[in-house]
Length: 419
Image 1 (spheres, rainbow, N blue to C red):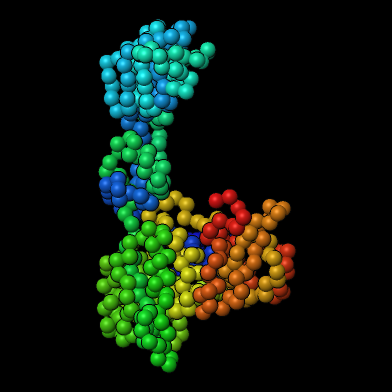
Image 2 (image 1 turned 120 degrees about the vertical axis):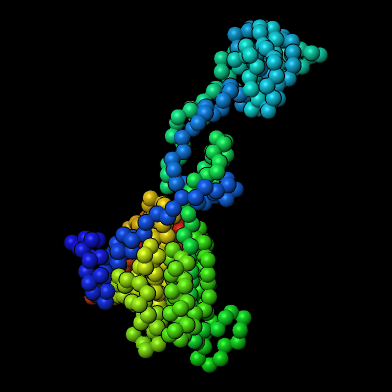
């Protein structure tokens, strides 16, 4: 078995060696180190990665609180007739005290008055002048009361470093008053599309030209993982201007992604220029689509030179770039779920590991069934539309039959499953 370290060493010795996708991933992920820490306002922390563990600095709640609107009472006071001596609202702490024969009107979340140990909900009571009649015969101590520290005790671990801060996590942080929030810096990414044949969306297309779609697909994909796109544009197909632009973007970015210019043609300038600007780790991966994939490093900057075919771009993003960005952002587990699925129809063989776009459903028996999205040509971007998985089809000589099982990388939940 080839280890990540020997693969990296071999690729450094011969970057043109054809790598298995797993070897190439090991090299990429071995170079992706968490970025530095910055402290941001709570309003800017959503979907960032927590850089330090969060420990409760206080009990939460810090006082016994009512969990229902009603009346604060002494639980073992057997009298149904009690004088109401005041009202305790949330946000206030009035000098009220409850003893047998007395009650205090209270709202949800309000601190329990001194002497009270239970709350009778308003629907179990009846007001008569300035007294309340309690229609509940048995009242247990602690009824409808949230005690001190019920949610968190001072010193309790709350969130681990590496936690992605969603709505619940942001709410916890806000409730504990932890601000500013220490988070990993977002990866700064530059995206360049190359090729004189490219025209911008909205412009007329002359014979031999195509509209630039890769750059826009990549920017959208980067936005879903919280990366900061610091530059996006069409690069010149001239050696000196392109070299200057690449050098500028490498210096200003944590990750540089190019599309086109990495194959075997005379005008594949990205491939030709890359050794002058960075250390090339590998140039070819035994995968379909996306064989001519260049990966290089310059200092701490990662450089991905992707092929020009639209599907190759998004497959490479899923297999290599997305997990690398997750590691840069400080996330401990960068992987998509990888699960076995059953093929719903035959799949032709291939000479390389193929990542086929597919729709995975849960059938009536609970099996995960996979159906490809039609034609799998690397130019057919429509094969990604509606796909929730990439089938991992290893190379072999014979066809994969319906009913055979293969692995799938889930990019979204299976259809028919609980979300």
